Amino acid sequence: MTVGQLLTWQWQGYARYHQNTTNLLLHIVAVPLFIVANVLLIVAVVKVSLGLLALAVLGIVVSVIVQGRGHKLERVPPEPFTGPANVVGRLFFEQWVTFPRFVLSGGWSRNLAHSRK
Image (cartoon, rainbow, N blue to C red; front, top):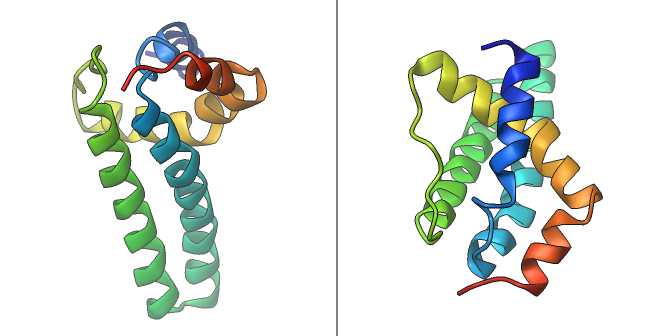
């Protein structure tokens, strides 16, 4: 699957997989944490800082765990991962592209207004 195909596929089902109130609220906190941790990871590598590296990895791991728990609350679970490259690609592009697009397009607000607990 190309990056373009992945982004199209993610976007087509995104609103369906993000309808639970708690999951939406967890994502609005966890996705920015993931993004900040990614930037911190780059800073850690540039500065050769093990402390920053550990903090960045912790932020990424916590973000992924929180989002995973949120997805377990959904009536429609996300599609299972098909392999390691699929895990990395889906997680990376969801955080950096698809979720921000969901928020900026009004999808997050709409789903929150109509969310199911």
